[in-house]
Image 1 (cartoon, chains in turn cyan, red):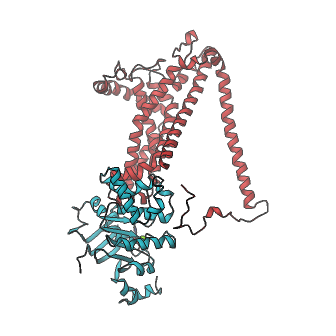
Image 2: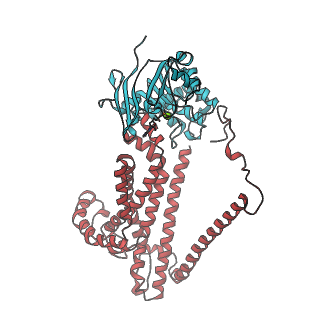
Image 3: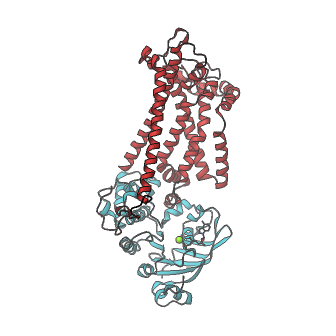
Length: 253
Length: 331
Ligand SMILES: Nc1ncnc2c1ncn2[C@@H]1O[C@H](COP(=O)(O)OP(=O)(O)O)[C@@H](O)[C@H]1O
Ligand SMILES: [Mg+2]
């Protein structure tokens, strides 16, 4: 088996005095889809947000432990969070395209931030990424319209395209389909299985069917602790822990 | 941008397409209540508009002798001589517009910067504390600003600021000339200090209303803090910032006491930023009490009407800028 791309060891996270994540260790293999499931408030968002250090934006949040990525503990002060976030992208629960930017500008803004100015290069990346996000056909005739003029599902795919444009090896997704209808959800699930050829995806979902459908590995959290982690096929058909079984069969939560 | 057939989503009907089915009939039915509110709001609106028109008509009646006597010359001539009953208001228009524009040029960047500092850089509590001080500045009466300007700002302008400006921008005639500490620059500085709280408070509200999600979107793409502020905070706030600037500009255009105390009250078009001058508001305040001739009173009323007009034009220009910006955004 290949080396893990991200290796989390004994991660603890606090919001001031509140201990939200209590010593979690997980290895993530490259080119896999990894789901995190668990009842709401168990720390799923807190956990993924720490993987690209966006948790630092919350006053009072701090993390301890190690998250090894490319041979470095990303929690250490020598890692620049700005660099890190270009490597580990994030798609949020609610679609959040920039309202003052067009579809095209939204897609390439990450590249522009890195200094890319060449118009034809930007156009090329926009097309590639919008195609990868399965949005190209729907927007190719209105690239100059505001990103917010799209429907919710399209906006979320635009946000995925925007993340892909900086070509991050790892993509974090925090309940990316929870605000979407089933058809839009289906499109994004399809897209993810496509993406794992090139990227490693870590996705938080409250939808267990979704985890079972798309994820290679699934982790189950309760109250900031990792109850079980393994192949999705094992977790959903043959869980080792009683709590996991109760949760996935709906006797819990 | 709408009306695009979209196969991927929108399986649910939009709420606006289904008419609300509230209880029908009865005087206090929802429908009648709506009507009542609408009538009340409409009559209030008519009242406010009526008040404005009445005010203007009365003022215009007072100003009429000056209008018939001087006509258009009133705004093209800067010859203001009460002794000879000759009145042209150009110098006041220039004085008002010039001091207000300089004040905005100084106050807008400072205010935007302070507002960003409060919302984006400092921890919440420190930001709130600064906000409190800013609001306290807003509560200082303008006469107090005038006194302070006369005793502290004027000497500072004369002894410190003037040499600096002359040695850097002095090659431009407008930034060179005798400086006594009282004049356009001092008035503009006072105005800037007075409108900074207004613009700052408005910008702070606008920046605060930017969702955290937008900030995280920018940071999540690997932007630095400053890039995030530019992308996610300033860019979508353009119309709000303009709104704050217009509010500040309105205050600057109409400010009377503080300006009257430090501008020198010279009814002449200023030759340099250090010259004495007068504004529309300051000349009214200074002269109306001792205006002997009816024509003088009438001319002052006409200046008042012009001030109103200038304020309206400033508002219209700002709206045009916002409208033009929004149109460009829509592509
Ligand atoms: N900004 C915050 N400040 C304080 N506590 C927080 C904050 N965000 C989340 N929490 C707490 O941390 C726990 C985990 O939250 P979260 O990670 O959002 O859970 P999930 O995503 O699994 O629903 C919850 O108990 C929540 O109340
Ligand atoms: Mg969550």
